[in-house]
Image (cartoon, rainbow, N blue to C red; front, side, top):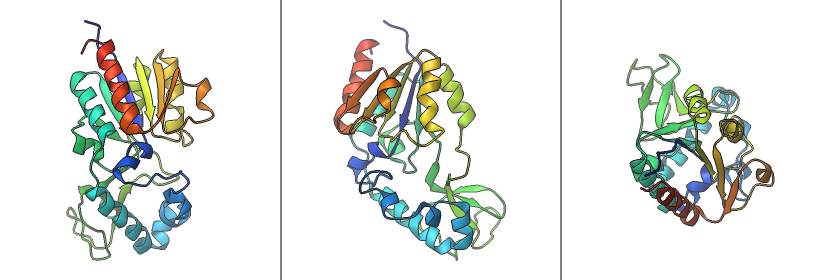
Length: 238
């Protein structure tokens, strides 16, 4: 039996598209309907907290109704076979990976299931809408909760842990991500430097990907991700 490889998976909005959730940068994506500066910056929240909360309340409701698809389930299965050497890093703020059964997940852009209090700076789980009447469960301040989401201009979460995993990676795969937003766009370079075999799985190949990845796999995530997972399981005798 082959030694278990260190596997780092990066997922973006494309993996959740077939679960009915919008991507951000596609032709019908979120940023074609909203201006980033209106709903996804600290300045926007300071200007109009109601507008920003309404935007994320809608996303939270959509995510709560969504169900994981075959791609999410395939990654959860992969983790079960490599429990000590598998890390899933997601740019997504939904919790479809967790619904599918994944446990070793880092949300580098935060999650809709948590809020951050601007008064006491504590985080809390949150399921419903956030309004001006919402009260922090820690300090009981009113109207001080914001989505625990990394906005433009803010530093992504878990970067030290992610970079350490990439430095030790044997396999890196970027799934359903545009590959244009840093720091995630640079993950493949860190993985390359570690000697990892690098894969991109997207609906269509990104033009800049051919010089960065060892293999480009195009097609819907519900087809390509299960096939990719099965390939790894077969290769490593799982």
